[in-house]
Amino acid sequence: MTRVLIASDKFKGSLTAAQVGAAVRAGIHRIRPCAEVAVVPIADGGDGTVAAAMAAGFEAVLVTASGPTGEPVCTAYARRDDIAVVELADVSGLVRLPGGKFAPLTATSRGTGEVIAAATDAGCRRVVLGIGGSAGTDGGAGLLAALGARLLDADGAEIGDGGAALARLHTIDLAAVRERLAGVEITVACDVDNPLTGPRGAAAVYGPQKGANGDQVAELDSALTHWADCVAAATGTDLRDRAGAGAAGGVGFAAVAVLSARLCPGIELVLQLVRFAERVADADLVVTGEGALDEQTLYGKAPAGVATAAGFSGVPVVAVCGRNTLPANRLHEAGFSAAYALADIEPDIARCFAEVELLLERLGMRIAAEHLPPDHTAERPSAEHLPPDLSTEQPSVGHLSSEVASDQVPTGPAAGAARAERSSAVHRLPEVATDQVPAGHAAGVASAERSVADGR
Image (cartoon, rainbow, N blue to C red; front, side, top):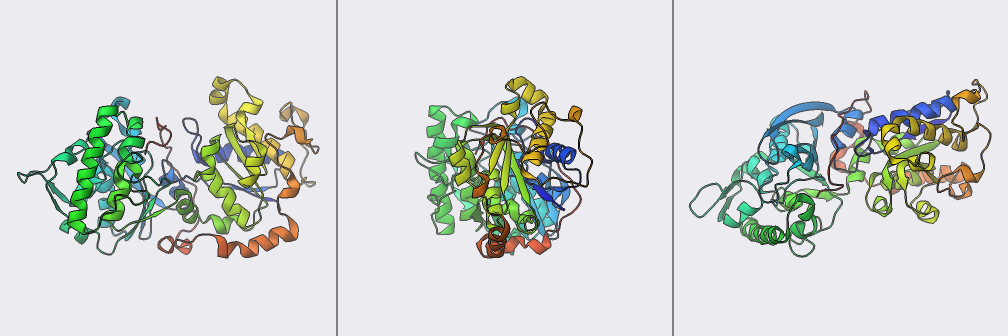
């Protein structure tokens, strides 16, 4: 039996990862009804991370926490045994700003700390934290305060939330944080290498995405510099220049400097959570995707991570997307056999958004016809059920979007050899053991649209 694994990210602003997978699966089944098609929603550590964990069998635990400007929001973390998956974007992210109004100087990460506190208070000893999509630039101070840190000004009063307030910081007391998180391992999904401060720091690079003007960027960078000085004095170690310290407005810095967290690529963490290496072992084809395939895709985004991981198993990978700007040679170098874009079959962008599921189903039909062997036991679909540009006969290469020669994709003995080598090549995370993350019922939370692409 032909087996297909669909491991796509969301199409931002249109469909969740689960909805993308369902649409493509429906299209595949219209052409190859006997194919075994599994949908495994994924994410790159930002929004959609909790939904991906839930689709892999984790359970949602609802929490009410502080939003980026202090208002209460209803969010959730995903739990399996003693592992908790926490998503910063859904509690302290840009999407949670009331009315979408930026608050560059006062937005806080406090709510994310409250969710971590809820998880650890409930018995979780391992926390996977996705930190993409943040609304603030507070150096992670709010997160630490929620975990028990006391951040005091010269008069002994709490300094309050937000990056600008860090300029008033005089004393840090971390005793309660250390006591609360004793024995807890924290792994952070982080895909940027920015330091905390300076021209490549959190304020300079990401502050404008969060509404900061030139003067506010300078104010925030100065406040973060003072914050780093105070943390170094309290911990005895200065980690402001650590790669990733500037992630999520400096939450990366607080995680490594105070919580002794490890920073790992987001897609690697998510693939571990969903047991991708085990699922892909018996697959004949992997379908992945996201809203846009471009140069950014190749640097830590979910589809590139899926292509790399599937490549270790010798399984060919095709991508679906809204639009594709990558030439064939770049697709091949990244491990993709082909890419199928909505814009290739519907140039009207408005219709692409309005009919995205229908168009993805059509792409699924093309993928089935062009990449899966014929199913001679199934009834042949009638012409009226096929898109006008599709037949079940072997198509010419002209039908492929950004097509890459199929003889460059390992099959047969080569694929088998690649599978044998997979286990030594795939990164393993001891704190997220795959035998503790079983596959389960398909579940998910539809993540709301993030107004800034990365928003770190």
